Image (cartoon, rainbow, N blue to C red; front, side, top):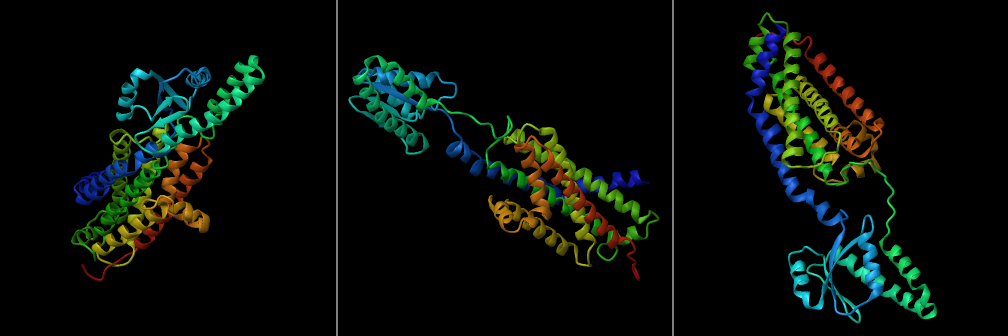
Amino acid sequence: MFLHELFYQIKCSLKTKELYIWIILFPAFLGIVFKAALYDIYNRQTKFETVPAAVVTVRDDPIFSQVTKGINESEDPMFSFTFFSADEEQKALELLDSEEVGGVIYLEDELSMKVKYDGMKATMLKTFIETYTFQETIIKDAVMKDPLGYQKVADALTEDISTVTEVPLIPEGTNTNYMTQYFYNLLAMVALFGSMTGLRKTVESQANLSALGARRSCSPVKKSVTTVAGLTANFIVQSLCMVFSVTFIRFVLKVDLGDKLPMIYLTAVISGLLGVCLGFLIGSAGTFSEDSKEGISTVVSLLMCFLSGLMAGDMRIKIEDRIPIINRINPSALISDCFFSLNMFSDYSRYITDIVSILIISFIFALIGFVLTRRRKYASL
């Protein structure tokens, strides 16, 4: 009987239009917007990459050649220099126009630079030229005092400009793009929107709220069997939606969610359970109409997502500074923090704390829902 009821409930869930609109289509559209508007900001403005530059040599300068050669040959160079003669200036300018280089440096009596746009690359090149010009004076003074010490001073200058000591603060393979948090919160929203399907199934089992509930109340099937089958069906369908969302974000939008993808999928499925239990709780509480309960579910879910940073990326940080307890009980914050922990930390202690909190909250929601529906009777049907 349970399996028959479960199969029937799954078929009914798959025919629910809200499932496709709010849990599949809307998050997918929002993910596309996030990808187009936000995700590449990090790559364009924040992420460090070697800055390519063209050098037009109008005069020979052995010191500059020594320095730039040392930079090009370093392991993780800050700059990559391509050299052109004065007659090849047009080639360098073409590279600048096509944005293949960040700027063109002219090696004349004094160093000068031409850029297409102001920005990080132009600033870095300008800083390099200013630093080199200052330290070139030091080298020339040293050569005048000790001609044999030229190579030693030039090597020191190269090391000073090009060497960067890396101190790994995060595990290898970690995505440091801070815009990824919007996609973590998007997955949290999908999980909490699962409350809509859980709510609908609960309302459909109440005789005073739907005709289907009245017929089920007259059915010989135990109400506990119907309720558990409905929750299980919702959880299965919601799990499929969560798997779809992770797959869409990772492989269609090509957002890097970290290198622990199996754990990401597992976390998404567990998060879906919380959404279903939330819907079960809201659907079981009070005698409001189905539309009213759906409105409450939507408002509650969006409020939780807002507090976790879906609409304002730094909201969760602000709450952590002022009222940290909210982040410990906000389901959306816990879900997004699970994904964040998997990406940023090799230690699972923070992740385990979050996932246990999610399971406890899900259990509490489900328990209250069962208590509210356990002995509900009706004077007439």
